[in-house]
Image 1 (spheres, rainbow, N blue to C red):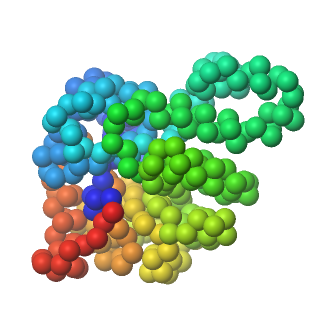
Image 2 (cartoon, rainbow, N blue to C red):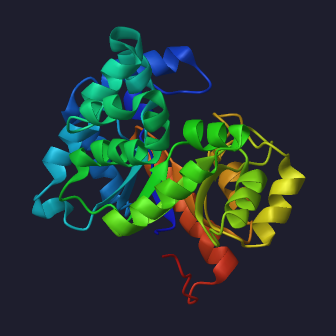
Length: 296
């Protein structure tokens, strides 16, 4: 995993600080050409990994990248599921209609044989089918890390249904030969839970910033856990939705011994360049200009 990862919130109108900015971004990125132009800027700045949701429009981005020599070294990190896609489908089609739309194959004849009890027993298989459905758009794309979104990770943590996190972990390892990643707003609880389930040194993406924005358990607990180096850690929401100036935000995260990578999103060349430059300079100051930092 590279030190700097590029995110996709800006492309789909996700802005945690301003609805007005979110609407403006939605309008700006209505066309796929606009998204590709920003990705090209990120590549020009030396960022070669795009961490993206499984939004329907990402399928077209994959079509443009797939087989294009220009993007032969470009990696995508899928994050699933894209919750709004399923929420909208459930509203329009109902639960069974949604499963029928997104899960490949005819599974209903199988479920009908055993009724609801059989369906519950086979929910693990259904989860695998839905993972496969989400991954279809990435066929032929380099996806070395595949993530489960925090909306699912943290829901399963809260319900105590961690067996399904293990199902995700094993399926990604076995079928896709990729590293399974978990996105969370509760890093301490997730690590404790995964370790109890037998998953050691997992790959995790968590909110990490100096004001405790979306950090369940608080800054002190996070810093303690980060220092233990129990996972391969990606820091997200470093700017705390714009509440922290970039230099101050990135310097704090770079100072934490245990943060391997930093995820950020931006839509202008100036902001991409600024963020990448600050992270690079902080990393050199921390590790020295001649030392080699090991990122996987």
